Image 1: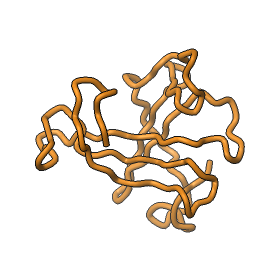
Image 2: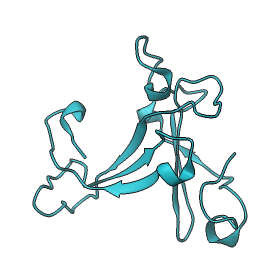
Image 3: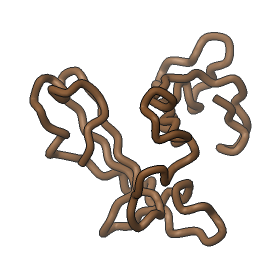
Image 4: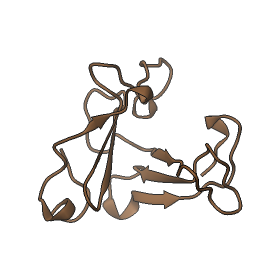
Length: 133
């Protein structure tokens, strides 16, 4: 696996986490008609979403419908929406809706032109499709 970040790895351990927790409620079957890198997939054998944590880092892994990942495969963004229970983002927050998003922008294979961003909501719709970050 590739580690994106400091050369020494998280917490100086020099390794991507070895222990992951699957989140089965985020599994989704392969949906025809959706571009592979945007089709979030998973089942009980190969879960679609995992998380791990250390004393200072939180890690996420998502499975998308791409059989192999070649250079310059992705040209979109992937988001992890975060709802902090009992806290609402000032001015727009609503309990049970996202307060933040971690967004991986993969529109370019050049590391200077993509990366991870922490974002806040601008619109909270009544469905996932109505949430704007």
